Image 1 (tube, each protein chain N blue to C red):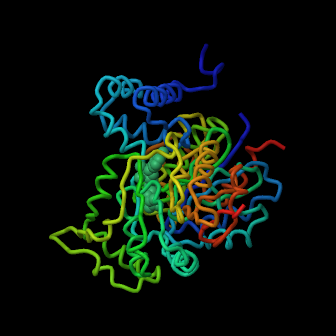
Image 2 (cartoon, rainbow over the protein chains, first blue to last red):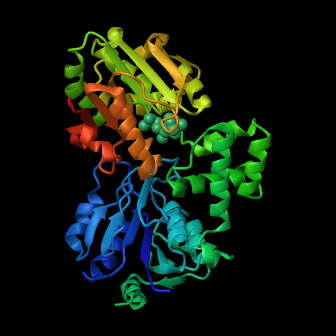
Length: 188
Length: 279
Ligand SMILES: C[S@@+](CC[C@H](N)C(=O)[O-])C[C@H]1O[C@@H](n2cnc3c(N)ncnc32)[C@H](O)[C@@H]1O
């Protein structure tokens, strides 16, 4: 199965970690990338501006009902969960927090696993909670591939450790290894 | 046929059947709600209510109507705050109220009012602006438990700090504490705030338009609908508003995908406040 989408979840230390991975992706990276970072519920999404300056790919905040385009990095808006619908569009929701977070990584990963099945790769990075663990397990169960930032290299190891425990099939990698691994999965 | 042929999982089939059953037996229509979220919540209901499958929920709810209210609490989302997104209420106060002032009497519809937080926010805002006396509020929802809570207007005291801060940021010029009495761990909002409110069970999906509204505030409800249903509901709002009336929706919602969008013009774009065109 060729890669159709990438989902990424990061929490404490996540902006740093993402800064090592996302800007390394080439401008012609051919699949969409969807990112949940735990951020305080503020209206303005500083992440989008920050990464738009650093990245070669287009960067934007995901909008409700928006068709998902390849070659774009989407961030979940603050205070909303981000979900993928099976028709290839986004949905936002203001449901209760999950793992004390909104957006929650589990919500994105589980819905994306449903939508993309084996065409999905999920990456769990540094963080101080367990969000993403259930989601990564669901993603792998649906045939997708799991990648986890190697806990010893993470600013906070709790979240990667929980993800590896919930989903032993996932591969642990350093941040430097992630971008080449993604490149190797896409077809050109 | 196996799943590889239909491309549909058993769970997806079960969900569709359950939603069909709810519609045919109870006339609750969730068939065009955003499916990923409905699925997530139904799987949660299955686990938390102790069923083995979605089909088991279907059987239970068809044969025992006391299951319905419990299921409704999963199918609808009761997350709200008073003065949620303070800048929205500030824009109503500063930009919309001056227009509303020119009418001798006003009708305001809070559609999808949940436990009433949005209604009381508007009632306080209208009281502060001196318009309460001439306004009738309509507060509607499909969840009977939420409507009862809205009618009661009682919130846990530990939520009041956030509400107070939101109210202040919205440009409120009374103190929120003028509008409720603290009773142990609860804040009981003044009856006077809802004296001129009609509460009713009304579905944006299956019920008809309301007449001659000057303002409709429907926030974080459209987001749960698919595009087709959003389209219908935006049409319903256009029909329910007076010409030149106002529509406010949630900060991540948009009229962009609706065929009825041409009935509206942006009024305060950033706050998703629209105005019904005169023609
Ligand atoms: C997330 S709450 C929004 C509460 C409030 N408007 C706010 O923004 O804080 C969504 C509300 O919409 C209600 N709702 C869902 N479907 C509806 C329908 N078809 N007609 C009317 N209300 C509906 C739910 O019961 C719930 O109270």
